[in-house]
Image (cartoon, rainbow over all chains, first blue to last red; front, side):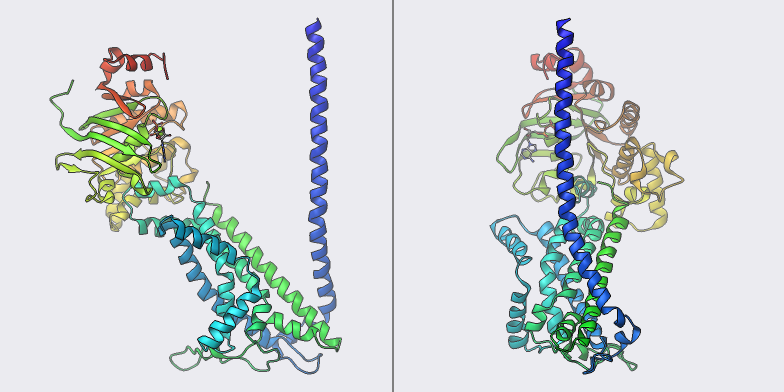
Amino acid sequence: MEHKASVIENLAEVRAMIKRHKRNDTLFAVIGLCALMLGLITLMLLFWQLIADGYPKFTIDFLTEFPSRRAGQAGLLSAWVGSFLVMSVTFLTAVPVGVAAGLYLEEYAPKNWFTDLIEINVSNLAGVPSIIYGLLALGLFVYILDLGQSILTAGLTLGLLILPIVIVSTREAIRAIPVSIREAAYGVGATKWQVVYDHVFKYSYGGILTGVIIGMARALGETAPIITIGALTFIAFLPPSPITAEPPFLNFEWLSSGFTVMPIQMFNWLSRPDHAFHINAAATGALIIIVTLLMNGTAIWLRYKIRKNIKW
Amino acid sequence: MANINTAIKAEARDLNFFYSNGARALKGISMPLYENKITALIGPSGCGKSTFLRCFNRMHDLYPGNKYEGQIVMYPDNTNVLDAGVDPIEVRMRISMVFQKPNPFPKSIYENVAYGLRVRGENNKRIMDDKVEEALKGAALWNEVKDRLHDLAFNLSGGQQQRLCIARALATDPEIMLFDEPTSALDPIATANIEELMVELRSKLTILVVTHNMQQAARVSDYTAYMYLGELIEYDDTDRIFTNPGRKETEDYITGKFG
Ligand SMILES: Nc1ncnc2c1ncn2[C@@H]1O[C@H](COP(=O)(O)OP(=O)(O)O)[C@@H](O)[C@H]1O
Ligand SMILES: [Mg+2]
């Protein structure tokens, strides 16, 4: 009898305890949600503000007109073309170099103090303020290599900037491949290169691509390093077209052309006293955010799509 | 104890093995693998069974700092597979392996089986088709997958995946096949299938199987080796080991007094 009573008493105690713990759960969930909302709502408000301000400029003309002294006619043509070309250079340099470096570090490099040092440095580079990259590029690309204040210089600079992101995401994607899969491949007699090419690379490219896109989205909005290397703020011409009508159909003069990019154009318009220009700036800001969101969305979608077939 | 009618396919001679942290995981192991026989390795967890098995295909070479001492000689060519001058890839072309957990590639069923052939430079589709079919039949999987060879291997059940891994290991006509606790992740029916399959495969090749399950060793193997703390305690005919072991330690382990 006594025993029974103590069981019931015990049970009541356990239930009270569970209730207490559950209360903590709820409390934390509420705090977390508030924190999340604080960040999200601020961002949404900013974004909304840009859209509301820039709304009159959401026209095709805005994309097909050069900048002008008159705010009403000024457009974004040279800026978005510049952004596109600079990003192309960034992509074509940062991706092969970053992926190769990540693959090398993960698969080939011996594990010793030197590779540890490299590893620490790569992680640290990801945290270096972007203006430092601008200074480096000014010294290296503009003065020493004499590449000028060109699309090439800007593309290479942003390439350097996102290189750590590409390297780190490559390594993380590779590390996610289980040891058992590698051993299976080596087990049937594959060489190192066969393992890397047939397996490691194929199973990690979804993750690598995600990192690349996120890096590119970051590069798209970068302003400081581009200003440092001396991008022009008012450009009423387009760089020479990369594709020509006559053989050899390709033309690389655009690489050495002067340029501007969207964040710089936006900065330029914002610094004008005439309020009409602020509408243009807001529209540009909204466009940059939309493109960035689209890129990140694509990254998420790609990751989902590619990972769907890989379960580990 | 040695059966005079069967040739030795491979033989460990005074084999020592050291992990990169300096731990000596194998201590002077010498024992034969008879051709077309199944040899089982038993012993408590951590005694070095997997370590020993993975010496045969030089799997330890994948991790820096590991060190072998002694020999594993393959016949009839008398190659010491542990010799630094022998390429581990050559060894793995002759000795294939099935792992503890099914580990198919995230590729199609067909590509999983064909991969060993591709690695060997085969790209004739007809030859490849034939070999894939033969291997899948050899692994008793053909009937279940013949209509969906291009499905992802991950869509198979655990037991089917393990048979797929056996087919992958079989497709390259290995001389020896290593199994590291191949049924430890499987249910009893799938386990029975794999055991039956090993017995069938015996006519084609030589098998070394690690198992933590003594009944399994008794059911499938011709010879059994009992290991403890990195040492080979006893090696004999499976019947003898399970009915009349020569060493007290073996008997204690077999009868469940220990382990
Ligand atoms: N990578 C490793 N590095 C160092 N020691 C290891 C490693 N793998 C296994 N060992 C040790 O070697 C011994 C044998 O392990 P293992 O061969 O896996 O045993 P079993 O397969 O019989 O359970 C154990 O003591 C284990 O802790
Ligand atoms: Mg083991």
